[in-house]
Image 1 (cartoon, rainbow, N blue to C red):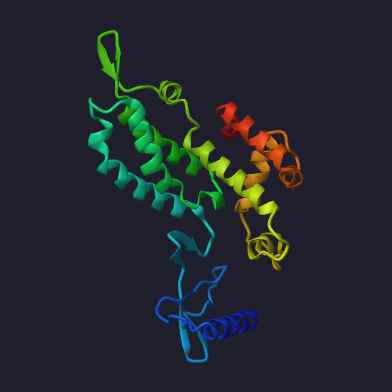
Image 2 (cartoon, helix red, strand yellow; image 1 turned 180 degrees about the vertical axis):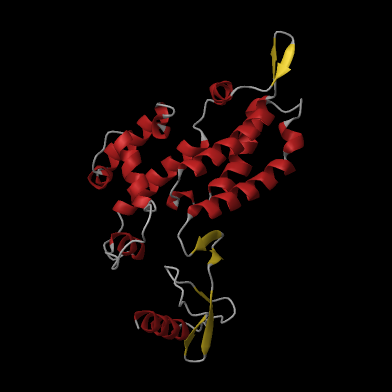
Length: 253
């Protein structure tokens, strides 16, 4: 079995450097759900628990490779940061400029951590937008309209914010990562995983979007039919990203 051979090679390499594999922290996750999926995976004296999801380097990985659970987790974590700073966001002393800095340095990085690898559905984009507008309403406050106070409309918020919305920001991160990926060495593990040909068939029903599907769609909106060829030219790719930033909403159409 290829998995067994890979693990034994890892164990040998780790042993040569004086490292040992932690049995309790190592889990086994199949890439596809199966009725006959075993609950444990044994190699030598190791007995790994089979799980449906686990957290790796702060990111949630699950058997269906579904980003929605990770995005909800990130929103929850960023929301905790927002409530911790709610007094500052509603302060009459702090300027709006400083409130935006707080948002961009303390909340946005928590929300967008690992977003370079996300695949966004319309639902994901919607909940990200709802969360962002909650923060912007706290920053800019209500509007006095003919003597009556009301919350600001969405277009009013983004006119005042003068920055890319969260969905555009995340898609820009993904395009930047795509440009970085295309210049990786041929033997790079990351590059080999992405260009590898996966055997078998995709499951029945609506096909799940892949990372490259999102990159292709965003590049198409920017006028690039073949994103790989476009990303190989660094200067051209950078100009393309600047174009996306200059034209608000271009990646969200």
